[in-house]
Image (cartoon, rainbow, N blue to C red; front, side, top):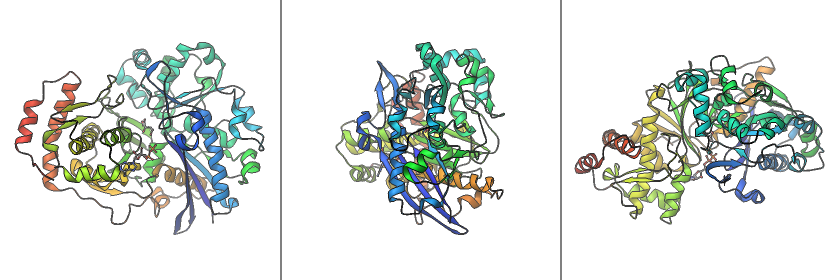
Length: 545
Ligand code: ADP
Ligand code: XUL
């Protein structure tokens, strides 16, 4: 009975999920995780990232940390997975999107000849031309975004070409910044990988390609043709084409586990399938293989996403269109102030998650018109670089109201800023660490006026990666299966997890959405003081839970 292994290299940790498939018999056989701050403290990260570099908007992670984590987790799965390693048929992975890894030209040769007696990280020293990789939380490239946008003919032209207008965290603007700051280091760079293709390269002991799910998060790929877009490359940095891996379909086998993994941890020569981004992997991990539903992932970032048959690019410039693992497309809107913002509010009031949930239960939906715009960190949606939480009609010392305000503020923003996807949302698949919190899911159901299903394990990205390995293995064997059959029995909601919206609350949130929009416009310097709107809302809103 074959086993498929899926990794997820997220912002805060690395996870592995192993699944077993035999006809109708399907189960997760092993899940293991490493947490970067806790388990790899030598890298000095906080929540998986390093900040600063003299620039408060710059955020990155050491690529060596990801490599060491992969080596250690492969060892952990080999020793404690509880299954015969010879059964592993294929491996794939998911990684946080947009982050980039800069390697010297000799990296490929070094990766092909690693010594299995020595840890991986020790053997990669000196291969990186940038020791800290910029990651998706970085928002330091406004100037590069402007230059690329102008060179390509404006935001709408860039969005039509690549699926998104220029975003600070996207790889192209990051590459341009690297080239501008350190042209010599850029000249020494032979290969620029995404986090996903870098980790796949480590597994195959060579140079893995990029697939269109993650490739679309770069502002460099022609979305319709799924090839590098010459105009975008030229607008970004010189001779970029030669430094980028190929783009391949998402089910492409990049190679087999290299001799290093076989000799070091006892794995077989299993197929390694192109890795993708965490959001594309989560799409299949929560079973969204048809159009018409959305998923909301409450992880380090909060994301709203759904499958699209055709690439409908967002005319407002808020969201993104990426490739989907099925070969279709997906729409996505990303919010940076997700779990870490919820944690900030939780910690400010000295609560744990139980206390956080109790605060939600103790406060009335609509929070009597109090609104928080939780911009603890620079925000992606809407774009905010002037960091700072904005509170309207909200007493910051009122712990319970503050908790409700952060959750409502986030979900109201998610609902309004994902309208461009043009999906009539009646069902939401909730995933990510905070989806374990039923009180948050009730607010989600009420704000969206939709049924919400919880997904088990919260690691839909790792599961999606394992399912992608399974799918690609069947394609390679000449026995392709429909995606509905691939996800069946795995990407299923938890029994009894359905949260239904309360009609009265849905009405209330419809009204609060206008108040929230007015607060946002005011905070962004585009609208009047929303105090009269808040007072009017308060006059007709409930005072108790
Ligand atoms: P990533 O995006 O890095 O994969 P996860 O999806 O694993 O992150 O989510 C991790 C986050 O989940 C933590 O930072 C934490 O804030 C949040 N979390 C975990 N349990 C709860 C809970 N009961 N209520 C709210 N948030 C939670
Ligand atoms: C998506 C995004 C984040 C990262 C990290 O565009 O920036 O969701 O993929 O999870």
